[in-house]
Image (cartoon, rainbow, N blue to C red; front, top):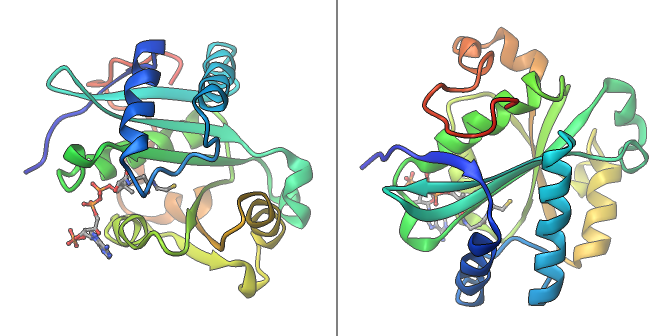
Length: 205
Ligand SMILES: CC(C)(COP(=O)(O)OP(=O)(O)OC[C@H]1O[C@@H](n2cnc3c(N)ncnc32)[C@H](O)[C@@H]1OP(=O)(O)O)[C@@H](O)C(=O)NCCC(=O)NCCS
């Protein structure tokens, strides 16, 4: 059953709820493993969001916190030769277990991709997913938009970023990457030109 999400700024109270959900969740994708580090990370993202340097939003369904999504530019020095192709933004999504399998993922990814092209004029939007997170990889495979999946072993476009992040995180990652150019040739690109009006997020998205 598909549900209609509402996007809104992430509040400190949400951070507390998300941290509680994380404690019970093997698929928690966020690096900080302590409460203090997680709160500091969110505070940094909230400030960056206010300054227009990142996007961080809570996802709500029927007035209940369902998760959050985030988008931020990758520092050029982390990209290797890929930096020559333009801005690369990294996206992330977390849905609490009750909110999974309800069609929210595609709606969130659509919003993040719109922000990547419209807000950041990015050439690429990439998601770094642990290779053993089969559900997240299967969820990307179901999305209707063209994308590529790369591992560090492929020694491809995202090799420098993957190697750096694998070193930081200590496990193999897959780069799931959407390019503005290939999406502009795909039918349905119009979807990404403007964020959806149903969103309650900041107008600058
Ligand atoms: C990743 C995430 C956003 C995807 O949203 P979702 O609502 O769960 O995704 P969907 O239900 O649309 O798709 C998941 C698919 O994986 C399948 N799946 C579920 N568990 C699976 C498993 N263990 N192995 C393989 N596939 C699995 C589902 O059946 C579904 O495919 P189907 O509908 O074709 O059957 C959500 O699961 C989540 O927030 N997970 C925790 C955080 C995370 O992993 N974030 C991504 C890291 S960047």
